[in-house]
Structures are given as structure tokens and as C-alpha cells.
Image 1 (spheres, one colour):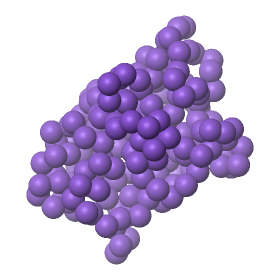
Image 2: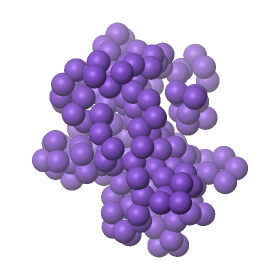
Image 3: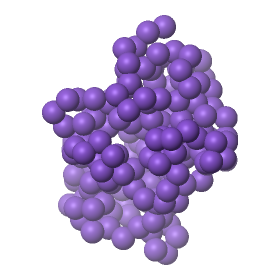
Image 4: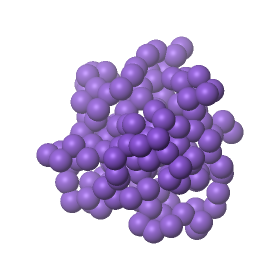
Length: 181
């Protein structure tokens, strides 16, 4: 399994974070609570932070049949970054209205899935210890050298088709810190 997919579709090797596959139990709390589950990340983060989340679209492109985007999820109001993510979305598997909202780039995928009642399963494939690269630190407002944690996840339709491949990286502290090198 490519642990950096689909992030590797956006950055050269030199700009990618270093990741190590780990057991979910090795992730410290509260990050374990936020990562080690089979729920969508958006509602999990919204419940933890007590605020709605919106999407900051950093980059996007089509890659074959997949719509790939690089995003930061931010808390409404404070703009605090709570997740850095790369996602490859199979648009052809979504109803037209949901597809349109995804392409608008304002709502997280989890919100679109809920709003359009798209039945699916969130299936984590790997948990990660992340030594972040400068682009990850800049996006999350964190420091180089701080250990981050994340997961590789897929959203599956009931028939097993993959709706989305996702790499999710969380800041090491609930509120992060200033980006420094």
C-alpha cells in the first residue's frame, strides 16, 4: 500500500512528509480518539472541537477518473486548521448534486456525504506517524520536527466500490502552533 497516496500526486518526493505505519494503539490521546475509528473524519473533528468545519482548497486536478484535491479543514470562525488532507474522489459514483458540491470546493467530503445521504463505510487502512514536510507544517501551522499522526482511509460503497482514497494528517496539538523551521 502506498501510504502517501494521493498526496504524492501533488508534491515531488523532496516535499513529501516521511511516514511510518504504526498500530493505532501507539497513537497518543486525544489524537487516537480522532483517528482510530471507522467514522468519517469531518463529524468526528466537529464533535471534538465543538464547531463546524469548512474546507480550504489548496490544489486540485483530475487524475484519470479521479478528482484529486489537497485541502486543509478549518474550524468555522477561528479558522484553526484541524486536518491536512489529500483525497482522490471517484466523482462518477456520486449523485449529480453531490458531485457539483464536491467540485465547488467549499464543503468537506464528509459533509457532502451526509447532506446527500450517500451510504458508505469509512475503512481505515493504515495509521501513521508523520515527520512533516514544510508544506504540511505551513498548512497546519505547526513546527518542523513535531511528530504528527494520521491515517490512510478509504470510503467504500455498500457494493465495495471505492468512493474516495484519503490521507488525513492531524496537527500534534488541538490548536497547533506557529509554523517554524
